[in-house]
Amino acid sequence: MTLITGHRGARNLWPENSPTGFRNVLALDVDAVEFDVHLTDAGELLVIHDATLDRTVEASGPVRALTPEARASHRLKDSQDVIPTLAEVLAILAPAKTKALHVEIKSGPDGNPYPGIVEKVAAELARVGLEDRSTLTSFDVSVLEDCRRHAPQIARLVSVNAAWADKQGGLRTFLTQVDSLVDTVAIHHELMEAEWELITDMLPLDRLCVWTLNDETLIGKWLDRGIGHLTTDSPDIALRLRAQRSTHDLHSQHPGDAQ
Picture 1 (cartoon, helix red, strand yellow):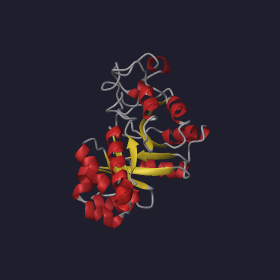
Picture 2 (picture 1 turned 90 degrees about the vertical axis):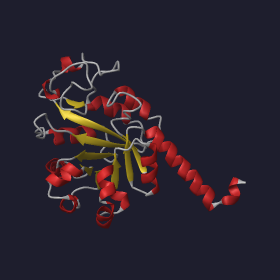
Picture 3 (picture 1 turned 180 degrees about the vertical axis):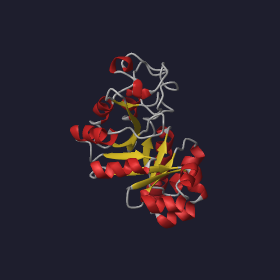
């Protein structure tokens, strides 16, 4: 069965990376919740996607420059929430013991990793006993090497799209490089489609994640292919389609039950 991940909580349903979204997504039958982490100069781990505030917050400027006081005063757009800390998000998600956490470690506005962020994130996950339920994710192989060095007990996932694969010397070279480093490879759906034979020759379906799918037809297509993981902004659609297929498969195996 394909495992379904709510991207940035479930950003087509609620404001992305918001406490409200994280609380609400727990009511859905998602298998995992994905969110992003930045590190401020003040030492706070903040859950927000961009390295700047402008797109998702009623403020502007780099995330890393936020003081704790400023963070607590800036609301997310279309929300009464403020930017949550990692600790606050983990407190919301920890009680949902069936949900895995995909924790994407982001880089600063210059594209470089934040010094010390891996150790800080790993320590926070350990503090609340969520190491076994968590996967540390990044596009940056050097960040994932840091994850293996500092938190080898936590699973790892690497993300890649066509442009990123080209920068790494091509998809085959990239997949060979990361094979022993990560548990899961998350591939943009357009690249996955274009290189399906290559990818499936190199990796089993259960190690593959396709992202980010929100169109009903595309979601159905990848569910039918039996991909291991599917990341979506609209987990309600993906869950409905998965349930429909499960019911159909059950009736196909036991046709008399449907009469």
